Length: 154
Picture 1 (tube, rainbow, N blue to C red):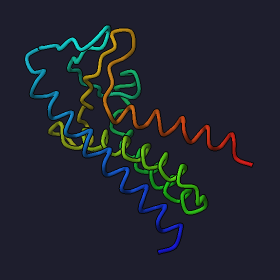
Picture 2: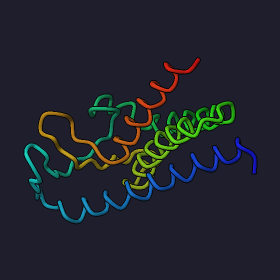
Picture 3: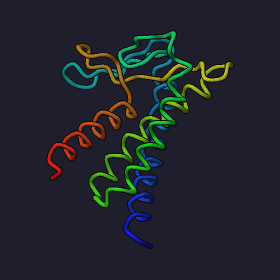
Picture 4: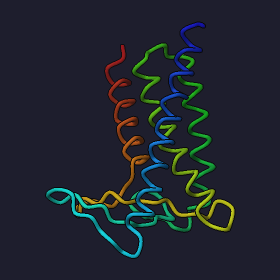
């Protein structure tokens, strides 16, 4: 297996792990935090169930149905970029972004009766930042890593 194929495979494995962990934690949140229950963890960290039909920070509810399509297009573009970069770090960062994006797409596809109208399950609440989930963390860490890798590239 050549380096490019390994990089793409690595990205897809990381993406699959992110989707799996994200969906498992969302399932837990839907069960454990039903009926408005909140769990205080430490300091300002609280588990608190919320649903987001819009974009980041619950903005743009009207844009919700287009987000999954955009996420899939961006994922395909990023996978294509992995072909051009043999860096394992780049492939890993792309895997995080793709996994986080697709995990939230799964919510939008399957958490409502209408096509692409579902809400993303959020439950990690710092009380001073918008509520988020594991997929959101993967997107932010992956995106920041891609930015850092791009800025330090020759």
